Length: 78
Image 1 (cartoon, one colour):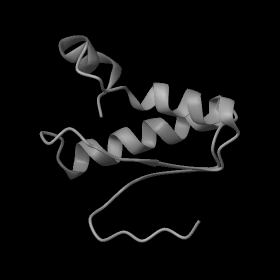
Image 2 (cartoon, one colour):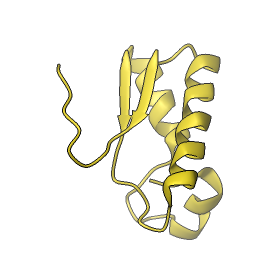
Image 3 (cartoon, one colour):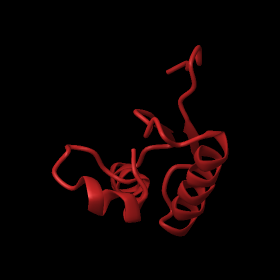
Image 4 (cartoon, helix red, strand yellow):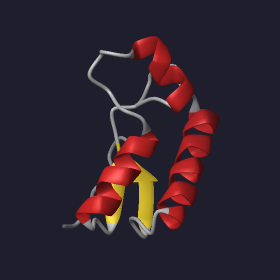
């Protein structure tokens, strides 16, 4: 839900950063990570930047080969 900088202002709210999600997914051997429950104040540009940062982190951590943001109406096949 948050960037690492934003999390400091929301500590204890029960949410995490995209970095924590990528790290957990990498440790679990996940191939596709879908980020959801976004900060309502993030516009499309902020979400695009967040996803790009998560994708770079996934490459660096040898994590999921696919990282994307959930969108209204999105259908995923498991």
